[in-house]
Image 1 (tube, rainbow over the protein chains, first blue to last red):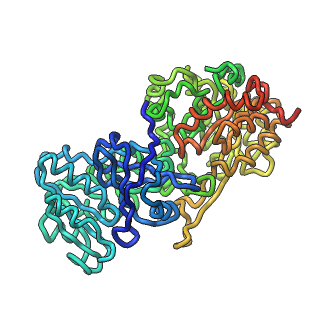
Image 2 (cartoon, chains in turn cyan, blue; image 1 turned 60 degrees about the vertical axis):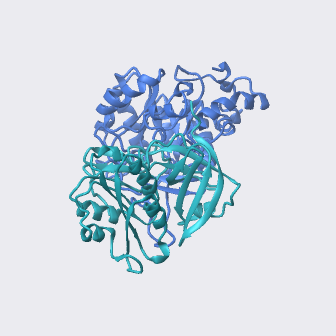
Image 3 (tube, rainbow over the protein chains, first blue to last red; image 1 turned 90 degrees about the vertical axis):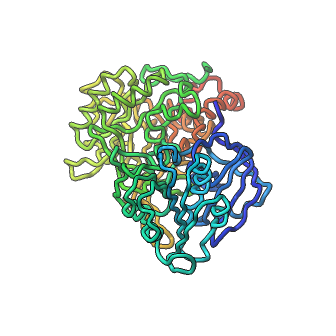
Length: 251
Length: 305
């Protein structure tokens, strides 16, 4: 039986944008089956682990991008390269771009919802798809990873809420302006963004949700949500849900 | 399997006293992705009600120092589906009996669930959670009043031949009086303690972190409270006690059994370390050697000798 608590060596850990850090880890990545899965980081002197989505991975390890929002993520940001990070791995279902026949697909990310879309973009390209990527940030200081997506060969569009770069407004405004409302979509970001994307699109898609979690592996039911097909645990049956099953019971 | 770890609850022989607590282990089968759950003494299954329940709105979880608050609100698919689907899945991977945890919001609901659980071979003992609000009794929890606790105990005992363990709430003035009332009403054992009511507030907004404001606080921080209460109840009643509250390692098991527990349930720790029950079972024999304990059953209630 595979040990699901893994030790990773931190290769790099540096600031990408305001409060946003990128951490490269060396260690087991064989458990990753889909982009959009996550792991749970052990924090010294904290009771619960911190769920962080996988941005990218290869045979040697994986990359996390996280925002410093409290005690746990602050501690992560202070860990120097060479030190170890303990993680509970193999969590979440992830995106399944193979579920769509269309070649052109839309990837929509907001803030720290952007990272899992990077691994997703790579997966889409491997499957012969042509991803159009819309990235939304609050302001110029929050922007990261645009070049990484363009370097992959993606068609990238940008919006900021204050208009300091790209289209002023929301990712859903870009969807309308650019005529992207009929493409199958994959979205990750804050709840209001997900809701706006879901409302704006005429197509079906997959949405990755965030919720306060206890365990991260389906035991505590702390992160449940109601869906058309019954209650689902964001950590176990999610974090990615189909646009056809989402019930918007909260903002 | 180590013979030295064996204990017995109301005539039911357990390979060891380690039981994951209700609400922290789902219906058990989820944990087969971590280890073979047949090594466990038993499993206390997710709190089951008559009707399906989604539970409370999210956020339902708040981290605390050495613990956490949960306000899940008894999410479960209802007793019929628990039996037809969840127990069916569990039976495929688990070959022992379970501690079936049952909740209700009225006496009739407890009785209906107890009757249905009584017919299940997989059920070793019934664990009755009396911490739920009584919807016909002004919403006050059955568990805060000796008369109401006794009433539920009697009603459940009347419809089952399985041993009935009452799971006590610590959010009461006198837990000993409630344990005694359950004993007099015919309970076969006591499970204790349930979570302590707690709350946390966001520093930036000042608002509650939990959507429901309050929730059940559990984790190592509550261990001294649990030990104290188990000690007091052991003094006052003759029933076997399943000790619950903050147990996170083999040392905690020894301490809880010394206070008076015959077996233990491990709750919150499963959520931060899914391997904890396995680790405790593997660690116990060498710890017993260090402490010169021959058999675990020898130390039950030794604090009182």
